[in-house]
Image 1 (tube, rainbow, N blue to C red):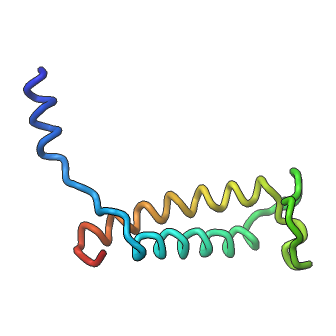
Image 2 (image 1 turned 135 degrees about the horizontal axis):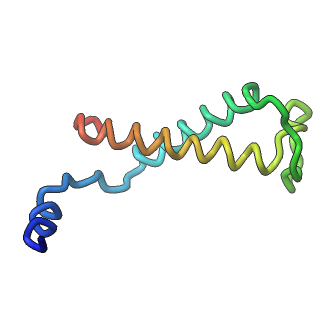
Length: 90
């Protein structure tokens, strides 16, 4: 059983190292999800508001909406980074 685990550890593909291209992909995927979430969330502004001044368009965009959209953005970004890394683009 231990030899199977050791064999699996040696055959696991490596991930790409962090570089500015990886950061740019993650930032863009988060911004994309925030923009989509701004219009897709049905009941915005139910929780606490962000502690920073916002433009009037983002008035009902609070902490819960920010956490939800950036969580989805990180999931989407990780998938994009892994896909582009395996394709050899990053």
